[in-house]
Image (cartoon, helix red, strand yellow):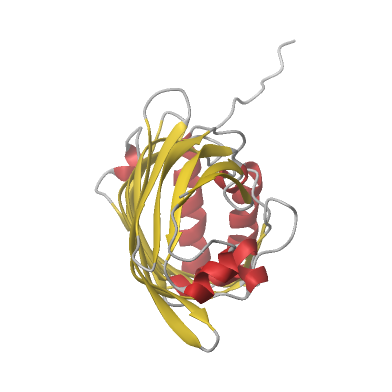
Length: 282
C-alpha cells in the first residue's frame, strides 16, 4: 500500500497561503499580532537569525513591528529597535508568477531603507537598494566604537544591487557606502573628519573585494578582501592594507597614531572586530 507523502511547498504556494491566511484574519477581525510574530520569527530562524518581536500588527498597507531584537554573532543581544514600519507594494501578477517580487520601504527611528525585492531560484535579489541612517546609530551597533564612547556625526548612505543566498548571506553584487559630513565627538566637541566612500563587490565565486577612500582630518585609504563564511557578514574574515593619517592631535591620541604622519597597516580579523598591524611609519 502506497502512502502519500506531500512534497515541500514552492515559494509561490507559501506566499499564496500566507496572504490568504492574512486576508482571512483581517476579514474575520481575528488578532493578527501573535500569528504575524510567530511567522516572522520562524522565517528568521530558518535563515539562521535569532529574532524576537514584542508586537506585530497590520495598519493599512504597512506592517508595524515593535520591540524588535536581534542576536549578535557572538550571542550578545544588539540594541532593540523600538519601531519598524515596512510598507509593501506588490507588483502585478507577483503572486501568480514563478518569480514573485515586491517593493519594500522600511523606517526605523531616524533610519530608512528601500529596495525592489525579487525571489527567484532559492535566492533573494535586492535591486535599487537605498538606505540612509545617522552615523550616531553606529556608536551603539559596533563594539569598538561603543567601548571607546565615540559619538559619530553625519549621514550614511547605502546603495547598490545584491543577491542574497538562501541563508540570507550576500552572495554577489555591488554595494556602495558613503559617509557625508563625518565627525567624531571628542572632549565635548565634534571633530569634522571629511567625507568617506567605501565599496564592496563580488561576481561569481571567490572573495568579496572592498575599497575605502576619503577623509581630511582623518585620511583613510585601503583595499582588500573578505571571504564569505557563514550567513553573517559581520563575522566574515577580512584582509588587506590601510593607510591612515590623523592631523587632529586628540584624534591621533585616541587611535594611537603619530600626529600628521601617514602610517600603513595590515588589516585582519572580522568586520565587527578588526585588527591591524603597523607596517611602517613615514
